[in-house]
Image (cartoon, rainbow, N blue to C red; front, side):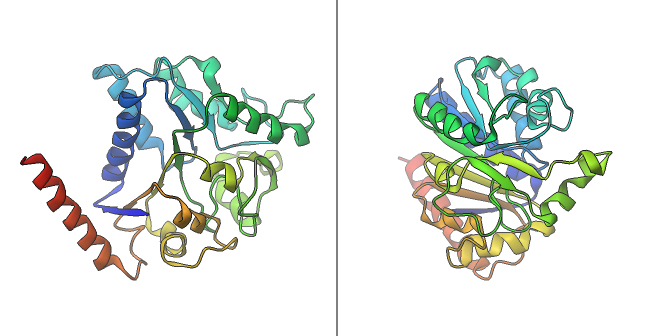
Length: 265
């Protein structure tokens, strides 16, 4: 696990966008796993700017989102489909027929959505880079605490804590979904590379067990310790509860030294 502590949210967004761009420049038909919420918004804005001003192209990219609410139509402003169109897809040159969410239509059996989504991911060659945020209770996607670490895409009941955290996005509390379809933890771990973004003091108590705690279903994000290629990008506030902060800074210093030597050759 590569723990990178940066000055602020803008620096986290820049580092996340740089990771995606490096994958895309190396593989123009890359498959990205994407996340919603507040944390990735600044990163998406940087990708939009790179597409508009620097010639970055998403024309051949395929995307799979982590999750989607059950009970919201794709054109509902609070759906994650609408979020992705508004915050990214409508602003870049991506073919939106290659953008996928685990959507559950009115005539779709919710139990069929997960296996179909898994098959679709496999048919596109798997995910090259998965973007994650983290919930205050350590969830990734909508894999709430006690989720199986070997889970696949499926229906999840949201915790009261998650529902309360997302209430700000819904004018009518009665219209707020309590169920979602989410990629499973094993699905996320299948990605070739993972980047987790976390900003703000309110995420600090979830970040600490993710990085320094035991691997446990009580903190689903802790499973990332078992992935070979994962970057955790944090601002100072999100990193504030880490007990080995000095060590992470020391590692970063050594990496800069190695990078400087390579560049000097």
